[in-house]
Length: 161
Image (cartoon, rainbow, N blue to C red; front, side, top):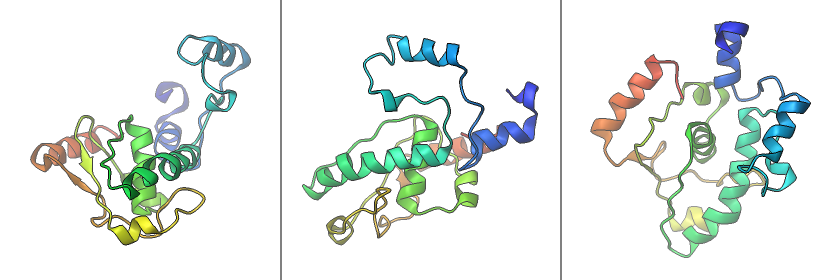
C-alpha cells in the first residue's frame, strides 16, 4: 500500500482518526465474509473498510456493555486486543484529540493498567462509551515501564502502531 499510494496516504490511512483505506471489492469482501474466521460473526461485524473513528465507536460500545458493569462490581478486567483497537480504546479512556491519537504508540506485549475511582464508575458512559471522568492516571501505567517506554520509542521511530 505504501509503495502504491505513497507515504503520506499510507500514514493517513494508518494513523488518522477519520480517513479509511479503500474498501474491499466484492470478490475480496465475499471471500472474507465466507472464510472460517468470519463466517460465524453477525453481518455488521465485517465491513469493507473502516477508519479509526469506526473502531472507536465499536470499542466504546464494548466498554459500556462489557467492561464498566464488571468494574462496578469490583472486578479486574483484562482487555486483550491488537494495536489499532488498543489505540482506539486508550483514545476513548483518555479523551484524546485527533492530534494526540495520531501520536499514540502502544508497544506490543506490554500490559497497560488503567484504574478508576468509584465516582468515575458511578457515572453513566456516554453513547460512545467514554467515561465522563477519565482514569486516575491519564495514559495509564505500564506494568514494566522500563521495558515498555523504550519499546514505544522504537515503535514511534518505525512509523507507529
